[in-house]
Image (cartoon, rainbow over all chains, first blue to last red; front, side, top):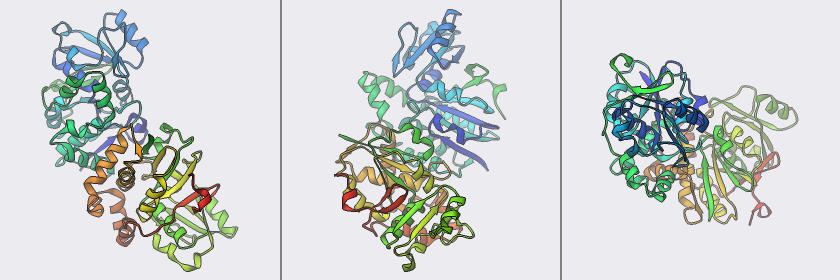
Length: 241
Length: 241
């Protein structure tokens, strides 16, 4: 049977063999939710970059610059990491260079996989429909917070494990633990996260509407996929079956 | 308020500042349970060593040699990793050199802490009574399985977080997640672990009696503590308050 596993933080990616594996990058609050939102609202491509310098340089080459550090938009850039800012019709057909505290690191550390795709609660069902038919193993790569494991990414990974129970087996404990956690809180994810760290960091920045949006199930049907340096909408010929 | 945190695997120990912190090493199946059993049955001291070679060398110097790899006793040594083998009255007052797949690595990687102590379900209440009075921060260091996060160590760490709620706060998500997991399964730890990896590995080796013993609450009142190269019974003047 095909295998599913979870990497709880980019700091543990060395434990996983990416070769021949599809990786789903998860940064619920908020990078992968924002990327999914952007792509579903017509953004042509997002180029994830590690540093503010690279992001600035691409801005001078015609990209829209999106930069977030510590939850806040960095001065001098057009966009931060709030999904609402990616719903702007002016962004349709545009290219965005994006750097965030955690999400872009997880993306960079996923390079080498057979395919890297972007997961969030927004495109949960679309993801499941694609993933269950994959002919290969699957790794759920949680971005965490500055290398530390976080709860919202783990919960979402647990939701994916739960949704793919019939199609994938696991032989490590992390999928089991994450699925347990998800089953415990799936009736009310928000209250399950009420004591968690990044939830409270966002709340402290008056971003409860971002939290609510990031936990909303199935607003989008797109699957963003990394193709070379760019994240774009998955098309029929990107599908691995 | 004093802080509590969890290191889910020795592979993440670099994220934690051990300086001024008390570390509890946790390897439920079975190293820390066996160490607690040995010390409570009168073993004088246990010297944890990383390699089979070191263990062999200490054996020639009069130590009892205990060596486990992959769940099995290594040929040529006196003891493996089953807690029952440490109940032998012949071991009273003896020194044991011990190397195991995971536990001794977590111990070695905890060096530098203010104090390193040994935790297991067997000495849970004794541990809580000591830990809650500590004047410093606390790190629960799970040994895992070959670097991977496992469920039984995480569950026990969650039990400690739960028991110390009034005395310690946490600002990372792992203690929250581990406590959630513990609360979900505390009524029946064994059934909670029924799909977990090392549980099934031990079951496959016909070691269900070891599993039952390792999940038994409060059989021992001793707290083993690392003093220099040796694990010994904690005495009054080892206490940090």
